[in-house]
Length: 293
Ligand code: MN
Image (cartoon, rainbow, N blue to C red; front, side):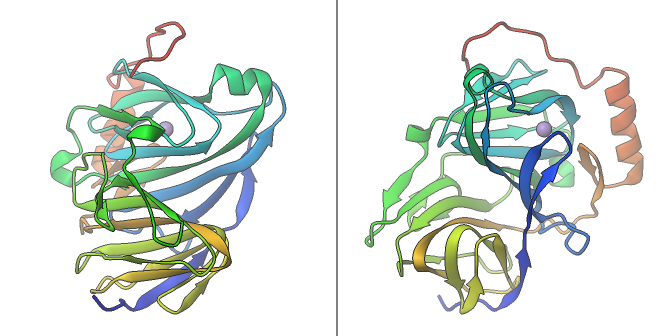
């Protein structure tokens, strides 16, 4: 497979949101609303919280898409109105299909809250096709040791959350064809990310630097492939790199988004707010402490 042309790069800048939440967000931005079928990518941290200072997102709703949380450091505790509850530990992933609607909370674990510590992870929003926006909510959670991985010939590591990359099959079931992997490369080591024709192809460099199809990607740069055909070839810079690989079949449907809801029309957004305010997206029932999935 030859390399596909590069459509452009996005330089994401780390910023502190209200409440002290450190985030680096390649998209959406004023220039790039979405990278179909992906709606948002947030790098959470890295940040080191003092004891008692960690912050999260208390009860809030979603409808019409999926939220994918991948932790590298720190622990996030999740609860939802569907009875889902779990602590997302380092290396673990939680793929939550909001579908017709869910209310969830994403908070630092009791331990991170009490003792403080390092927090670093990603949240990705994946759009659902119109025909699947109102499917029942679902929660797929996997521990670090359950994520398929492989040591590369140069010593780097690939961890595949979804799809197939480098012959490694991810563990998550997706609603449309896509791939999501975390790759750590040693200096000058390379990987070829084969992306199906016509799919969105993204490489996000979040530690170190890399060359992607001849284009330089420093830390915080997302390299966006043309939606044509060909691979994304990633070669690590002199300090090595950590990158996220993302590909997906574009849905090519109208997007109406407002806050926590992503639908196809304004009417459906109004309906989502009505349903939430009427309590029809459910509420979180306290289940006590402890870990369950
Ligand atoms: Mn959320």
